[in-house]
Length: 430
Image 1 (cartoon, rainbow, N blue to C red):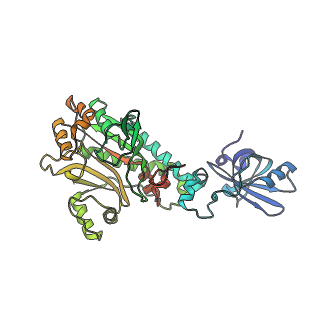
Image 2: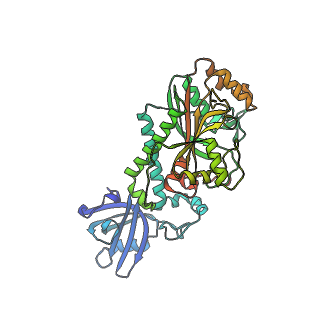
Image 3: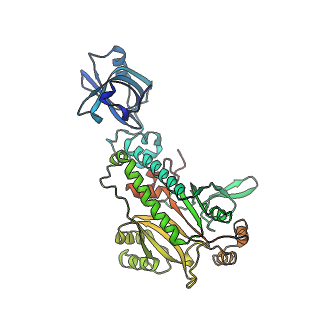
């Protein structure tokens, strides 16, 4: 039975491995192969006068990225990857790869992102790319573990819905038998409904869909959202949960993914320090006015240029708090002493927004009033409003973009690098 390449040591004596041919070199009397599996790379050295004819024939026939099974003696070799090599007595070609390859897996040749995504099954064989998704897996494990330890209940909400979560138009309509339906842009309404169900602390990690016509390095039309909702809590409580989750996730990745971090050539994987600064919206606008070089005034949403200017000034994760009620969703709770400002927040990385949240309106009459102020029809939200008439506790929550979290954590240049098969305005396959 084969063993992971990472486990092969000079002390193994004899070992059998399975993997892909990463590189090959023929120096006349010696042939060298680098064999790769998901755990690492090992050198296979073939002294042509000392191995069987069957091994020589297979070594001559095999092509890069073919799947092979190799067994032989493990020897210590200082200059080989991991300080060891295998001299084979068995070299079996399980599946021969066609040539030429759609892209270079050895990472010696630069490849455009579109070419990589077109052949994603090959792209993820590259150790650097695989590292991103191994870290993403570790990060989401850490998120799940953190929320379970904090007493959250995992829920699953519908992705086919009858009405817009935010009341906007950026939705994908679908034919649902004899009705019109939409792909859900957020679990917002459903996680709030679970507060009425007495679950008190819920979370969901799942897909969301936004029909935004953005073609930028930080937008996707299908993304993964990490959402929580907490009863008997305000915006301050869930901001503390969010910053604790971010720090814990970074710490777990730093502790468990050293090989992947090295593959990504990240010299200084910095774990954020909590608490994060709370920056009032008004002060954020003041920074943007001075440093962004573009016109922006109180009451405007924060543009990409303004985000960059504020991020450069802050230099670390921070919250923008106390937003104008007028530019936040209808479910954001206004301050009692100044209803023009609401208890909403955004978690910001210096590069971009990561998360948005708020304390929610839990009073039925105020919520109906807020919906009407946004120019929406409360009748369209009857399924959502109904629980608010039968004992809805105060509650707060947020949604965090998984891809943006990974993108900023690893310093990736494009959010599409943080998702296996991205969906944007122009990409529907593979």
